[in-house]
Length: 166
Image (cartoon, helix red, strand yellow):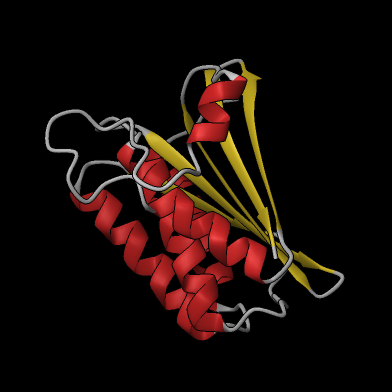
């Protein structure tokens, strides 16, 4: 199967149209702003919307916080000209938010530490880093949600995948 620039344009346009048709317009606008922000950094954020009727017990502004943390972490770990992925779905009055970006296998100790306050893998100026995933866990726990962290092996390499269900 070949892919040309026209196919990519229609695929991008279709994804944006699906995103803008979801019932949570503020979430849609926020995700769109993250797509354009990624483009400015020469990165791509690919969005797949499985359900346009997203339902959660969590208020929209808290969903935006969770989505923002997940997208920011995925894009920070993505190299220029690389791709991060966002998947949105909803079932049983819960929303599933999944991000995926290139990354290596993580140890159990690393996985546990990721959600500790102040823990960061950033090098250089570490001040102010290490609270995103800690805040993600607090928000998810507040609404009795679940966080899953996996390494997914594909033909394109290893990916780190976060799945949050709230």
